[in-house]
View (tube, helix red, strand yellow):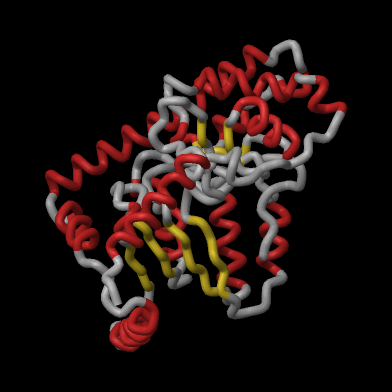
Length: 320
C-alpha cells in the first residue's frame, strides 16, 4: 500500500505517495484511481500525476487504473481520463478497469470493460486469451443486456452526446450540493472557529467526501438524528438533495457543538435494530431517516416477513 492522505487531515499526502512509489519493488503492480477517488474525494492534480508517471517509468512499475466514476469528477469524460492518456503518451502501457455501473445507471447489471495498452499487435491475442481464461473460471458468460446497451449508446453519436450531457448534469448537481453544504455549515458554525472551515468539501470531487467527522460524531449522528454514515466520516454526496440538505447540516452542527458528546464517550450500540437495512457499509453511506421512506425497513417488519414466508413454505410443501 502507499500513503494517500496526510494523517488526521483531508489533504493529499503528495510526498508520502511519491516516496512510497519510489521504494516499491520494480515490476510491482500499482493500482490507482483514475478520478473521483473513493473514499476520499481527493484526486492528485495534473502536476502530481506527471510526477507519478515519471516515478512509474523510472521504477518499471505496472499501472492499473480503477475507473468506477468516469465523468463524475468534472462532468467531462475526456477531462477525467487525463491520467490514463498521460500514461499512454509516456509509453507506460497502463491498463484500466472501467465500470459503467454509476455513469450509465446500470448498477445491477455489473457492466464494465478492461482496457489493455500493449507493446505490439502480436501481444493482443495472447493477452485476450489469458483474460478469457480468467473470465471463464470466474463467471464464464456475463449477461449481455447491459453491455449491449452501453455499446449501443456509445456507438450512436446522438445518444452518446445525450449521455454526456446527462452525466454533466449529474456532476454539476453533486458540485452544487457540495457548495451548498459548505455554505450552510460555515454559516451555522461561524461562532466555532475549530469547525468553521469546510473548504475541503468543495475542494474534493466526485460522489464521495471525507467530512472530517470523528467516530464519536458519527455515533452521535446515528443515536440522536438517525443519520447513518461510515465511521470514518465518509458520505455519499449524491445522497444529498434540496429536501434533506438542511436536515443533514443541522445534525452535523448539533453533534459538533454538543458539549455532552465531547465530555463523554458514546458507546456504539449500532446493530440491526437501529440501522436501516439499506445503510450498507459500502454504497449507502448516507441514509437519512424518514417515517415515509419506503427503503427503510423496520426490524419487526423483517421478522413479520420471515414468518409469512415460513408459513407459505409450510402450506406449499407436498405430502410425502
